Length: 252
Image 1: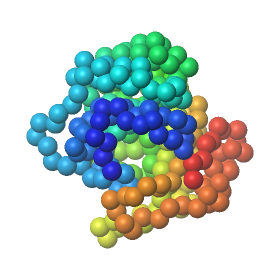
Image 2: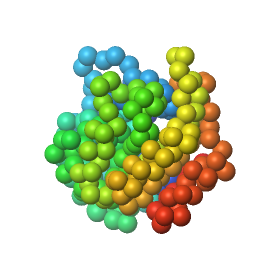
Image 3: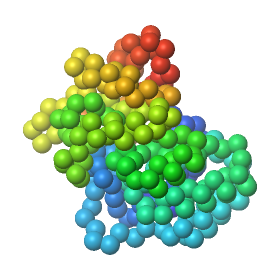
Image 4: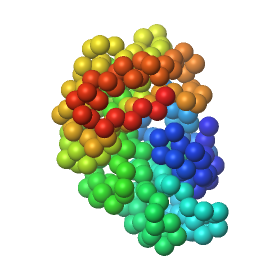
């Protein structure tokens, strides 16, 4: 499922409420530093010169949507057809978003769903600190599993590198993790095992996020052998963190 516009929705998000979606990536294919096996947008497509919206095009599209929609959304959500922080003008776009939000829907939150790979860039971190919800991904705290699930374009990427990026926010972010199991290209994958859980719990303790957001597969995926984790099992995974006093949200 690809989003064919810069601004789409509003849609009802399991995690965020009524969400007006923002897509900074191409409208005809996915562009991302990950190629997650559960991504509703499918796999990345080769493209030598991807077409990204300019700041002016984005501003016009967002202002048109906010000035004409019936009521205000709960949240403006950067997601779309890939990693939003890849846009070279992400900081300028975030400044525009804040200004238009304040003008038309001052109570709406601004959220960014990010795979965490671009957090080493100063401009990306500056932009993210302007938004309300920095929802940053860590799908496994074990390298082999992270690579199986997320299929990073940079196959040398490690969990420790991701955690180093996340530490730059001093806990001022929401950690999001998709739990699933299945098989892909002959490899079994399961980030719910006891070893996976313990490594993930330890990562949460190290990173100290303001909230932990756990979710499961909800829409069609490009890999058909993946299994949706039942709600009861998700609650069991979450319970040790809840017992420790962490703010945990389960979307299952």
